[in-house]
Length: 534
Picture (cartoon, one colour):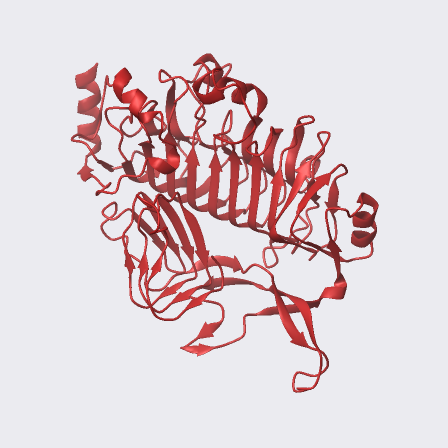
């Protein structure tokens, strides 16, 4: 939800017409609500630059407020499980269509015409962009006449894209499904690529559907990119040229970041999809303002339901998705990064000075065997959802959740939800957690072997207030009875497993209090626990 003013009444973030009103997370920005916001069963949520005048009610597992007024406090984390940042470090609102009058602004007789309003990037903001000191104001930005755009439809030809972009035009994708046989390559700075109605680009014959250069101010917004069934695409969305890093100086600009707003990337679901990497960022100063990168855990691909859990073995073989996102550029900021179900790491962050505000990630549901879910050649069991590269010196995450549900093979083990290099003073993770969703599956630690295990008996959520790479954390939180759980790798009974088979990630919401007890442990106590277990 973006740029909405709600006058009076209560805003519910879940559907009251369903029972029990399942919800699995979302994003809200540049929105004012005069009444109260009811979080309901939303498991994880990020609100950026919103204003709530009558309070926010409820939180489930991971709620993040950035540059917002009237949200919840994080003073007693994890009860409730809230993370806050007073001011948004950098923001750019999503472009949108407007009606403007031709000629002078005071010409009331002029004809109305459509244009695209492109908001500017702004730093250190709080509240909505269109109100200041209680008064309605104009959002900073510029108008682009519709004549400056190629208005694309599913029948637009590859040469038409090339010609329009070469002439300096922007792209506007009207609603529809686009089969992309040749890469659409955006090279000019400040080009706007805007999709309407979830315009969907499908990779055909293994192409990269959309690629940009490392040029300042490029905006991609409101588009869905699908992996195609024909062949494996190396990447589905590539920002910047991989060969330029790390030695080439960046041409992107911190004041005019390349921006991705409401960009969705999908592997499988409506049809089989195949890619090595869904999103690859090889540019510096990139702003991700809400993206959902999803390898399908369910769909209508018509897999053989007798081949694993509901066809999961065939799904694993057919829907190829190795990594969800790989970030190689420096100074990349992400707000609302949802990455799920890939066959290795959901996220690999190799660039320096990255900042992530709210990360949500479900591990793959359907690895057929532990061998399929073991890192080589290290032998580490499972792939961390959030992996920071060994060369990184500075990285920050606020509000991250990793979830497991190994329905296809309940013996699957994942050693760590998060992994970062050790001994780096500039690497800090705050308010991170793990959770067993629906029974089968084990995550042995939250980050780097620190934090309790989640499994079918101890589902969590378990929270870690702060992990500084340079030292050990000092506080744990869990929902059971002890700061560490050891030797608990039992899998639920067949009867309970059968009962859980109908559950999905959306059906795993606990409507009761999901938060746990805070445990404060000195380093000496941690050492004594380890010694006692030896």
